[in-house]
Image (cartoon, rainbow, N blue to C red):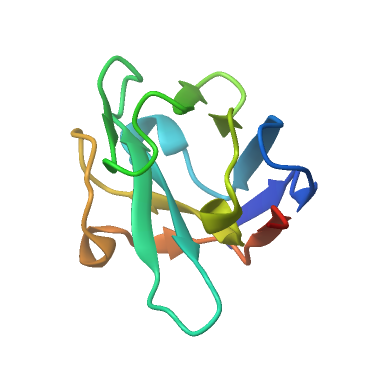
Length: 124
């Protein structure tokens, strides 16, 4: 059974940093590109960041570029999202996902496996 489990969410103040982690099991995720998506209350789920199969290429949504960093460790089957300079508009449930492709995919329909999500709250 393929599983992705996120951790590291929480309540932080604007300007703070937070690091999300996602660990996969039941599949060799070194075959996959990995991504992070988020969904704010009342809004559709949106792309945040993606990393290529080998970890050497990253792609970010404009809203997080320069503040967030995605990294992948194929030996540990993990993908992390370092979030700096957090803003209230970053408040959302963050989801980790895996796409059976080599490039840093940004479309949700490219992703075959999803975690359950972790809540990040940045009060205004």
